[in-house]
Amino acid sequence: MRYNPLDEPYARAASRFLDLVVHTLITGAFALLIYFKFERLDYVAFAVFGGIFIDLDHFLDYLLYFKRFNLKQFLITPYGESKKAYILLHSWELVFILLITGFIFKYIHVLVLGFGMALHLLVDTLQRGSFLLYCLAYRFRHKFDVAALRLNL
Image (cartoon, rainbow, N blue to C red; front, side):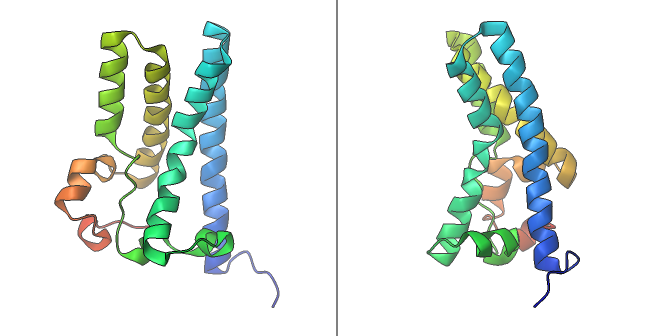
């Protein structure tokens, strides 16, 4: 079988790769800013975790549904295949809690993590055109059901 980039599974994998590139570029710029401001690699690590590794919750959603992990299958499977969208780290409420906690207690690590996550969620929100999709309470209220959330995944 020949590779055709217009085939849906390949297009989906390419879209996910492009999404990762965008998050990496934005997070990289943020991490550089943090490094030049504080000159601390631990802060940079928290920026990267918040901006990129937030997407690890997609693996959890995949594992909850398929009960095993296959990278190729993960890349070509629509997010909504499981009919559920938990993505627990993709939560404006969590970002808010992190930022408030960081400000109150002056925890720079927590602030950097929160701002990294906020940048990630901002990109996702702009891509999907919906703030509510990234509110945990909203997804919980709709039982994480993809159809009820009207997700176009």
